[in-house]
Structures are given as C-alpha cells and as structure tokens.
Length: 446
Image (cartoon, rainbow, N blue to C red):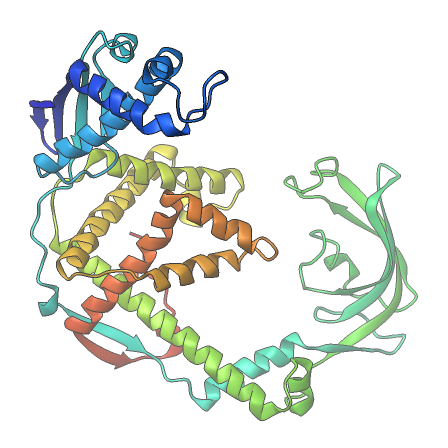
C-alpha cells in the first residue's frame, strides 16, 4: 500500500491511496482458498472444487468483495499510520476504473478525505465554581400537591332545576350538530357531561351554555377552527341543537383516607409519603438539570476552537428537520413563530455549533479521565428503551443488537451524564436553598 498526502486545509486532509493489482491478486487467491472447503458445485465432491474453477465462476464477484474489504482495511490503516482523529465517516473516491480493478488490469487507487477532530486544551474544570439550587420538600409543598390532586378529583352534584350554569359547573346534555342543516359524523351525543370552562369542546360551545338551566333547549352556534382535525368540518359554521338535562355543581374531594383510596393507596399518610417521594425526585432532577446547564454554559465559554464543518452541518440538519416539523404542525415556540426562516437558521446554526463544541469538549474530558460505559449500563439503557414499546420489547432489543449506530445513540447520553457527574464531583459546587418557583424558572434558550 502506498499513501501520499495530497491536501491539508484546516481540519481536512486528503490522501491518495494505491494498492497494487499484485496485492489484490494475492488477496483474491487467499480468499478463494479460504472458500474452497465450503464450495459445493454439481459435478464435484463437496470441498473438492478446483480453485481455478471457483475463480472462473465466481472470480469477478469475489474480487469485488476483496476490493471493498481492501478499501476498508487500507483506509483505516492510513488513518492509524498518520495518527488522525476522524470527526466523522471518511470520504472515499475511487480514482481507478472499477471494472479494470476487479478484472485485475489496474491497481486499486482512491482518494481518502478525512475531517479531523481539532486539537485543543481542555479547561481545568476542577477550578470551576458552580452553584447548585436546591429546594426542600416541606409539609406545605406536599399539602399543596395533595390539594391539586383533590381539585382534579372533583365530583359533581345535581343542582336545583332553577339553578343557572356558570363556569366550573357541569351540564348534562343531549346534542345534535349540523352543518348547513345536515348532521355530521360524531356530532351527536346523549347524556354527555361537559364541564364549562374546561376548553374540552369546540370554541364557543361552552360559552354558549353559561346561564342555562335544567330543561332548556337551545341552538348553540359555533365555527370549527380552521385547523380542525376533520378536514371536511374545518372552518365551517355549525349549529348544535342542545337539550339541558341537568346542571351540576362541583364539590371538591375531601383530603382524607377516601381520597387516597381513589389512587389505590390504603390511607392519607401513604398518599403523603408517595407525594413527598415523587416531589423529592422531581426537585432533585430539576436541580441537576439546572446545574448541568450551568456547567455546559461555563464549558462553552471556556473553549474556542475551529469546528469540523461536517459535524456542524449534520447537527444543524437534525435540528432544522425538527424545527420544520414543528412549524408545519403549528407547534413552534412563540418567539420562533415570529421569526423568518433566515433568522431561525442563524439562531439554530449557533445552537448546532454549541452542541458540537460541547460534545467534543465532553468527549475529550471523558477520554482523559478514562470514563467508560459498562455492558451492564448499555444493557440497562437498551431495556429501558424497549419498555417504551409494550409488546415489542424483543424486536426493539434485536434492532439494537443488529445496528451499531443505534447502540452508539444509546451510548452517547450515558457517556455525557457520566462526564457531567465527574465534573460535579471534582469541581467546586456550593448548594443554595431557593424557593420552588426559582428552581423551576425557565432558562433562556442558547
């Protein structure tokens, strides 16, 4: 194998790699001999087919495999020999005529272009200082959470016939909806309980029932939203002929053992215990997320180096695809929805650059600190992912076992969290007690 450097620009290097046809011929012969014991052809005893006959029948096909394997082997050897750290999959371009190479008439010659991970010094994270926000889960927080549970477990009791419905009340109704005088599918129900002010029905319908009382019959006129899920109704005016059976008033659930039994628990004390455990876990998770964000922000500030363009482009493409999907679904962030595509591209390009830079920094720290991921940790992540698809767990696990790239996607977040744990352990971290609302304040997007 002969390797010559052709070009070196920034983080990109290009090499010309040549493998002689004599070397390829030797590899072909070796591969044919390796195959011979397993080859079975009519007219010959199994394993006794002459190598010349195998060459005649399958030589071209085998040589194609030899060429592919040789490209993979020699490109990796060129990378190793030149002590390169690829930032992604190297690009290979064959320069010799492929047919001539597989026919044994020409040397294998190709260019190898490698985008490199930049060399940079990692900041001494042990000298960095961070503040970890913490919030104690006291009795009041637990009581407030239980009150919300009670509010969500309201029951409704029939009011007097003369009582007029107001927001927060429920009405028991029969209705039939029509568009241009014609009833439509799904537009009729009997004995339907609707909580006024819940926003669970078409805009304008609940408002049209405020003030009604038992026995009232009325037409409620509404307009379906322009983005309504049923395209044949979107944007159309409709009339709902409605009969009010009864008006019901809300009654808050009492905070007692009976409330706990509604959630499958034996008593109120057990409910309080579960709520405290869940809230402790929620606050701890939020505290760590805040601290991790502060660490990443500081690492981003401490490092400045050229980024591999291919990595940035790939990261941006992933982000941009998600942004476009959210835009089409009408789910863009309120601030983003006001921006042009050009402004969004600029903003998300910065985010892509930040992610690539931080990814490289965390990878460098992890490598120098010898952070590793055990098979048990990877297996645990695989099982956790499989559990997200009940009934398909085995197929999910088999998918990961057969796809190294998918495994790499599981490995990356585990590695990142372990590096962050390492930084938290070695940096100077001071705890600061704050109120719940401060702990859950939204950080600006970067």
